[in-house]
Length: 536
Image (cartoon, rainbow, N blue to C red; front, side, top):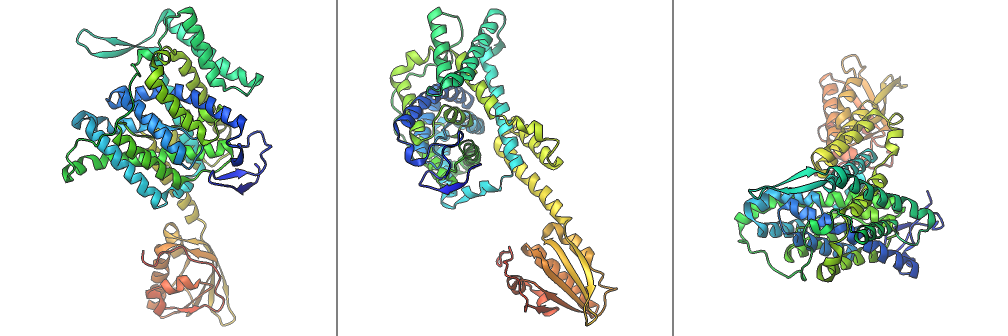
C-alpha cells in the first residue's frame, strides 16, 4: 500500500496516485473526467435509490414519498457537508425497522419528531468528537460487518422474485414467481450482471451498473416483456418537500415516547455511517473524517424530520455502487440527490418503467463486490477467537441488527484481548546485594491480570525486604493501582518492608494506601505515563 500524506478537507490521500487503486487526488475532484464520472455514477446511484427508498417506506409504514424525500435530503446534506466524499446516505432499512412500532402506535408525526431528536443526538456526538472511537472497532468486527451486510442485501432481493397477491379481504401477501415469469426474471438479472462484469474489460469511461440498467430497460421496454417494474411498487411522482414542524405536543410526555426510539435511531445511524466510512476509506485508500460525518448526518436528519422524511444514514450498497462506478468527489452524491428529485418532479413516468430485474442485478453485483471472500481463506490462519468474532458479527447482523452486532463484536474482541493479556503478566526473581528478594515484573497490570499478579507473590515465605521492579511492566487503571495497594497491605501485616522501583511518577502520585506502607524509589523513574484517570 502506498504511503499516506496529508491533504485538504477531503482527508488523507495516497501520495502515489499512479496506483490503479488510488483515488482521485483532492485537487482533481473538479477535473473534466472526474466531473463526468461523478455525474454518471450519481445517475446510477439515483436509479438504485428509488426502489430501496420506496421499499423502506413500506417497511416503516409510511407513504413512498416519505422515503424518497429522506433519500434526497440526506444524500444532499451529507454529500455537501459530510466527512467522506463519495459515500452515499439516504433512507435505510436499519432506521425503518426501529420506528415501525412508533408509527403504528403514535402515527407519522411522532416519527418526524423522533428523527429530529435523533439528528440532535448525532450532532452532539459530532461535537463531542465521538466519531474517533470507530478506530476501536477491530478488523474481525469489520469483516463480520461487511459479510453480514452483504448477506442482508442479498436476502433483501428475494422480494424481486415474489408477486404481491391481494386477497378478497384486502390483505396483501407474497408468493414466489413460477414458470415463465421466474425464468424471465432470472434471465434479465443474469444479463444485467453479465453487462456489469464485462463492460469494464472493454472501457472504464462509462459506469457498468448504469450500462446494465439502460441495456436491460431498453430490452424490456422495446420488446414489451412482461416483467415487474419500479411502477409496480408505487408511484414516485410528487412535488417538492414542504417545511412543517411535526404536529405533536412538545412536552415531557412526548419526549418520553420518542427519546428511546431517537436514541436507537441515532446509534444505529452513527454506527452504520462510520462503519461504511471505514469501508469506503479502504476501497479508495483514503481517509474520511468521522466527526464531520456525525455532524452532517445529524443536520441531515433534523432537516429530514422538518421536511417530511423518515430519516436515514449511510447506505453501504449505494456507496459501493458509487465508488465502483467512478464516483469519488462530493459531486457524485450531490448529483444523485438532484437526479432523485428530478425523478420525483418530472421523470416518474419514465423511471417507473425501469425493470426491477435490472436493479436487482446491480444489487447482486454489489453483494459479490462487498462480501469479503478473503475471509474464507484466512479462517484457518487467523486466531480462533477472531474467526469466531467474524462469524458472530455476521450472524447477528443478519438475525438482529447492525448496531447490536457491532456492539457484541467489539465487546467479544475486548474480552478476548483482556483474557489473552491477563495471561502475559509474570515475574522472575533475584536476590539483591542487601539480601532483598527482587521481583522483576513482565507484562501489563490491569483489571484482567490482577488475579495473576496477586498469585506471583509469596508474602509469607518472602524475606523481610522485598523489591518489586516495574521496569518491564505497565500499570493501567485503578484496578492495577488497587492491586498494588492490597499487596502492600499484605506485606505490611507480615511486618515486611516493600520497595517499588521503576514505577512512574504518575502511578506513585495515585497510590493511596500503599503510599504509607511501601518505600517508593523514583530515582530511576521511567518516562512513561500511566493510563489512568485520577478522578475516575
